[in-house]
View (cartoon, helix red, strand yellow):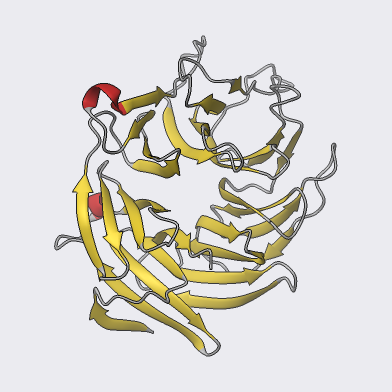
Length: 336
């Protein structure tokens, strides 16, 4: 159960959870359950303080960057259980969608499309602006950035996507234009354009990119071959919200849906996706799934039913599920 003491440090927490009220929760899994600690980052807890992004600051994993809905980024020290500072980037607006440590810089992706260096002077702060190409479509809203991810082998390369903002890959050495821009699939049988909404994406070890969409499809791209997806698969009638690699399986990913599904997808075939393995028992939208190369058989998930779950890809069972009272939005896992 949750401990009543707040801001009590514990370096043995396995995962940290960011909630919709601004709380940060540390969880230590044990053989008989889990220990949960609450960390109150600020006195006032409201929707503006909701946690929208989490990232480790250092390799020792002692400090955490926390992104908030009000465009600010705070730094939390796990050793002392305290927030060190809170900073608002000079450019951009909307919630923080991603925080990335790359090439010695901390990059903050904002919903408005700006990707900023956290503590730079205003003139050098703007790293890249992710915008749509010009299109003749009057029904399209202003593009919104949903996700920014780094290439696992090339830290200077970023992949971005969002609402009516298809997959792009950027090189930080030259951000005037992306080095790869995905091309949408052909029109449907009624000659209508297919809508685009990249809710999450991930790089695989072979350099391909998997995109999860709010429009209920998963796509596999190979930027070295062509701009259009190598594979497109529509999963049930549910928006896809999050994706992470399944490190124990080659070219397989774990996806979460808005209808409470966590599923293992096999993308090894070129023209067909094998029937996914589904982890059952979730009754709320899945906000994030997370995995680690150091523990390839394990996948963590958080959902709006207020549970944090630990799944095993080998046995296809859920090993732990812990109730955290507040609605969890993001999860950050220790590599050890």
